[in-house]
Length: 473
Ligand code: B12
Ligand code: SF4
Image (cartoon, rainbow, N blue to C red):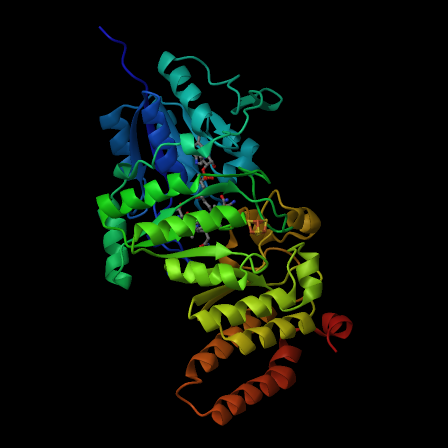
């Protein structure tokens, strides 16, 4: 009788309805990491099932899958936000006598913690070949230790199983195993919300830039990309199999190599895929001629990491961008009629009230259609986290860094100040939107009144005397 193939149960522990940020920022797509792992395992002759908790209430689907699928190994994707649920899944697996392995950004930075809390192994980097090896070990009932790319618990702390090189050629990866999740549910939610059937696509892994608050635990500063032809094949498959007509390119930065993106755009235009798309881009890369071509190929929305309207802050963050580039790109996007979503950050060490004011002025000048103003979150493993390690607050320790938008370290000002500043951005955004309907004079007046209130009443109340003395004009 042929030997039974190994079985792996993959788990996405993210429960959307319990995420306080969900309604604000999160857009629901199945985890591309898990879908790619699933496809790769299948290609290696391993049976795979998935418990995707995104639309669920709790971890009960995992319990059901443990009983019905009887996996040899449970593999859980981790983010800081989903830490507690991931640990719950590891404990369920252990109770069922099945070993579990964690992967993804959070367990990559806090490997020891995940091992101490119930995981039998952690894969703190690219997961595909390592998970195949672990699945065979688990099937054979052998220990998971000593597998290159995996970390296990030892008497003196975590033990690395040895180095595992990154996959050289991303074209070798199979198409994501979309059938492992309920694509109809994701696409239906999108269709109801936007009229479009949206899916996520990844064309590269890693990012060669080095912003000091950015957490890049899995791929580090390595950068590899699929060929434009491989990307086109994935776009065609999504269109043909799922009638997808809108794509979110999920790369850390889309189109880093100029010749590469030119070829991809040429292909999209030639094949007349009729897709609209969005991506995250850097202001230093979005040159006007490239932008025009992207627009022609279906670009509808761009996420731009503007972060601050102060050059001093951009330099402190090691962004490698200039305010002149921000302004040029924002204007070009506006002229091209592309929606812009700005990421802005408050509270990064070194920021004064004047820097925040400069950011607000920049924001008012360009009135991006969408934006998020977050309070800087020191993610474990980043230089920013190192910098404020001694100043992390009790909230940070309790929530282990997720925070849900709270101030997690002792910054220049109290949290109430940053919260108030967030409201000022919201008012500026509302006034920007009202510009077409209200007369410019009215808009101007409301803005001035709000600024006066801020200077005379709100800021003095929110910033305690001893801090104000040092930082305010
Ligand atoms: C695209 C993206 C999104 C998309 C999600 C698209 C999707 N569902 O795939 C959107 C915009 C929806 C999103 C939302 C959020 N995101 Co996000 N996102 C990313 C981004 C840019 C790429 C993720 C990705 O697809 N990577 C490519 C795949 C192939 O890599 P991967 O998932 O890491 O998986 C590989 C390895 O990690 C490993 N692996 C992963 N899981 C497992 C499991 C096992 C068992 C094994 C063995 C291995 C393994 O193997 C995989 C293949 O090699 C990353 C940054 C980054 N570069 O990772 C941030 C990132 C993952 N996101 C982050 C955050 C904070 C969020 C939000 C919480 C933000 C918010 N508050 O709204 C939400 C959470 C939503 C959720 N469902 O959990 C953080 C996570 C930090 C942390 N420590 O938790 C990151 C790292 C960005 C950052 N630098 O801060 N995100
Ligand atoms: S913030 Fe963006 S550009 Fe900067 S290092 Fe991270 S992924 Fe790269």
